[in-house]
Length: 115
Length: 118
Image 1 (cartoon, chains in turn purple, yellow):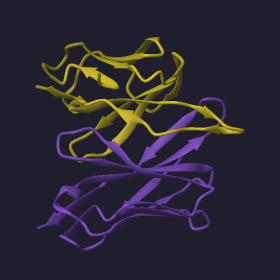
Image 2 (cartoon, helix red, strand yellow):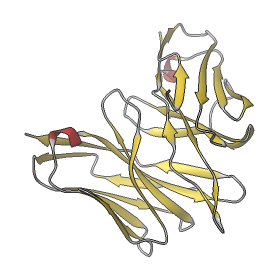
Image 3 (cartoon, rainbow over the protein chains, first blue to last red):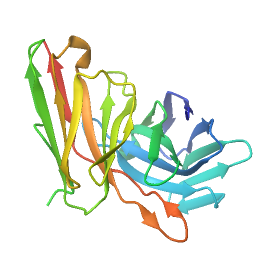
């Protein structure tokens, strides 16, 4: 099955700096790569996603890149703010016929932005 | 007006008991999921249903039995609860799209149910 590795597990940056979180996946059939943000005690919420036919996507201070050949994708947050502090999860989704999808999550990165 | 709602939010129970967690989504999605998030924050899929049909059943003890009476509901029943079942359980839903090829879309999560087995 799919295996998603995420690094680092914790990341501490100063406000205004950039943060980068990296993920690799094992199954080349994966075709959808969402990123979720989970604040303490709350539900995971999608912040950005990318499909396998796109190499990069940007939404304001957040960008995601995908390298299908190397099977890795990354989340980039620029000009970090304290409210960016949360656990970030990458995920990879395989469509294996019909309605059979499996969204496999990385183990999460605890991002702390220090004022 | 919550999109994906789970009840209860907190559940404290003794070992050996049987409990249920309910989930409902009003997004009109055709796929629903149960995820378990343990104390280390790992999010692991347990089950996936599409239009009331079981699609994914990960390696989960058969004490866990999902039930989907209709595509808007996916309940989770747990028999003979054990200490190791303590975790936050998230329900989620997503919609299958068909645009020349089948696409899956983002999963919307419920607020979670914190289960504590004592």
